[in-house]
Every structure is written in C-alpha cells, then in structure tokens.
Image (cartoon, rainbow over all chains, first blue to last red; front, side):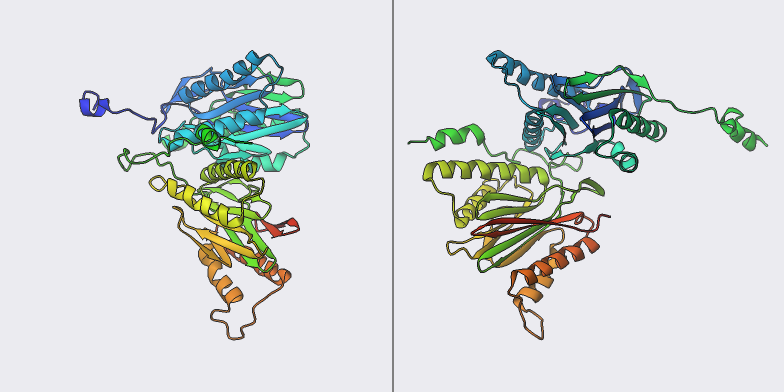
Length: 236
Length: 239
C-alpha cells in the first residue's frame, strides 16, 4: 500500500485518529467552570505519552481541551492562539469572549466536516466573561452546544450518572473538583485508554488557572487481590 | 443608501461544498449524523403554533436535554428543524444573515413567502451535498393567517396548514390527519380554538416521546400572532 503510487498520490484525510487523548469532563460551579482531563496520549492501544498537559489556555479567560486526534488538537490551539494575538495588535483592549472562541471553533469544525476532512476532535471550551460562566461543546460534525456540564469520549457513558448524582448548579469549586476526581477514578478502572494522572483547570472572575497534574487515588490492596486468591483457586 | 449586498455576500458565502470527487468506500468517514427529534406546526386563522422537542441524540446517547430546534427568523416566521444539528446551525446562520441584509436593503422584514422561497433555494444549492435537515417553516401570511411550509432535505416544498417532521413524524402525522382534517373520523368535529389545538399538540408530543427514543425531555411551543410571540415549555418524559 505504501509504495502504490496511485494510492499515495491522493491526498489523505484523517478518517481514523492515530495519537488520541481520552475523556474530558467539565462542570460549571458557582462562580466559574472547572475542567478535567487525564495526561495520557495513546497510540492505538499503547499508552505512549503519559505526561502530556492537554489543557490549553487560549486567552486570559478561556481554556480549551479536547479528546480525539492529538495533532488536530495542537493545530486548533495554534489557530485559537492566533485570534487573541491579532486582537492584541489592535491595542484597544477588546478581546474575543469565550463564546466567540466556541463559535469560531464550531464554524471551523463544520467547514472541515463539509470538506470531508474533519477535525477528529470533541472539543470543550470553558470560560468566564462579564460575570457569566461559559461552557461549550463542539464535536467532529460542527455541532455546537452550551451546557452546564459536558463529557466527551467514554465519560459520556460512565460519568453522566455520577455527575447527575453529586453535582448541582451551585456547588463550590472543591465539590466540583471532587466530582471530576471520582469520575476519573471510575474511568481509570474501566476505560482501557484512561490514565490515573489527571490535570484540572478552572476559570473564574480572575481568569484561567491551570493546576499541576495530580494522581487520582485508587485502591488495589484488597486482601483477595493481595493474596492472589484467584490463582490459588485455579491451582487447586 | 446603497448597500453592496453582492460584495458582502461573498464574505460569508463560499463555494458550495460538493461530494463529486469523493469516492465512496465502506470505511469512509461519513459527514452525516442524525441528531433527530420531532417538530410540528399548525396554522390557524390569526395564528400559527410551532413546536419542537428539546432532546438532542447522539446514537443511544443524549447530547443535550435543552437544545432548541426552533428559531425565530422574522417577527412573523419561525424555522423548525429536525435532523443533523450542525447543519441546522449552519442553515440558521445563513438565513439570519440573508434576512438581516434584506431588512437593511428594503427597510421591511421579509414576508413568510419570501423566507420560504429563500430556504428552498439554499437547500437546493446544496443539492449534491445536502443539508441533512428536515424543515418546517411556520409563519403568518399577508392576512396574518397561519401557514406552514414543509420541506424535504433538498428544497422541494409545499404550503400546507399543518405539518410534522423528524423521527416522530410517522407516529404523529396520522393523528394530525385525523384530528385536524377529520380523516377516518366518524364524527367529523374539527377543533378550531387555540386551546384545543394546543392540547392536541401536547398529546402528540407525549405520545411520540412514549414510543420514539429520539424525542423527549421538553417540548417548546411558540405561538406566533400579529401581536407577537408567546413561548411555552412543557416537560416530556426524560428516559
């Protein structure tokens, strides 16, 4: 296939992702929005890059995260950073709001899907502007949604019920963070492409705050597990 | 004042994408995706009632429970769309831009008939890479009576008094034929008042939500009269 000139002459598009990031979970809390994502980039089923900080701050009060093809993500980060830079050149103090970034990204994704050359991403844009929190989701088709909580990837299957149970509109930052940690604990146990090191970031009135990666607590010293009870059962 | 509409148009209207040079393979990524849902509109003398559920599906997943499928384009007309939500957003943006320009140029809002024709032309302009949207355009005509225009994905359209589109269409359309036209009805009493018709619409959505997994959560209803628009939101089953 590689040396077939007929095949390689054609322009190739991303029809399946190569290096991928896993689930993103984002919640609005009283006074801001908090986002969590693990630090793993998988190469197929291999856990290839384990310490990638995947949360990008694209302006003073906007953060951007996504799951899916990691190279597409890096490209989008460059595109979004360009916007803030060109706004700076006017030197009038006017900067695009988080909603502007969400809208721009939705149009970009839609344009690319129309060219059948999609951005293989599920994007989350979070921000805080004019006393209003903002949380938007943009998918591979250009679907654009604003919501109070957003999940992508496997978190859509595993974590929505957890979030519904433990989260409300007026919860504090610490409560929201705790919900996200609980979600990643579940993902680490059940999603093969998940990692136990996660990075959190939040946006509030003061702007975006990116935290250092942290390890979610998991418990493996159950006595049955430690004593290899299963093995003993099979060798009897 | 002269406004260079054609110059301005080229800034937001690019070449229509075409699927012409795309080879179809079974493993090819598909740009289409059905977020579905149900929309319904009934025109009566002096008003038009348009309704849509607020669920947005992604396969068996629910993407959103409060996404609107209705968009008010002018004071007198509303677009209701089921199908792919990304296409709906693009279509809505296009119509809003064109109608804003129309208003700047003519100093009057476009009539419902004009919007209906514009929508048809835009849908057909993407004949070979269609918008995956199933539209109803509900509005008031020049006598302020309710009319509904129903479309297929590529712009064929028809004027009617009521219509329903989307994943609940098959469940609802026969009931509307029966209730609003009197088809297959022994005692042909047809409801006339707004309240009676609202009751029928709510029942239609409750029934569709009962049997169709892509319809549910809430039903959003807009009642458009010459005096303005009234918005009602009622809950549907959420499972």
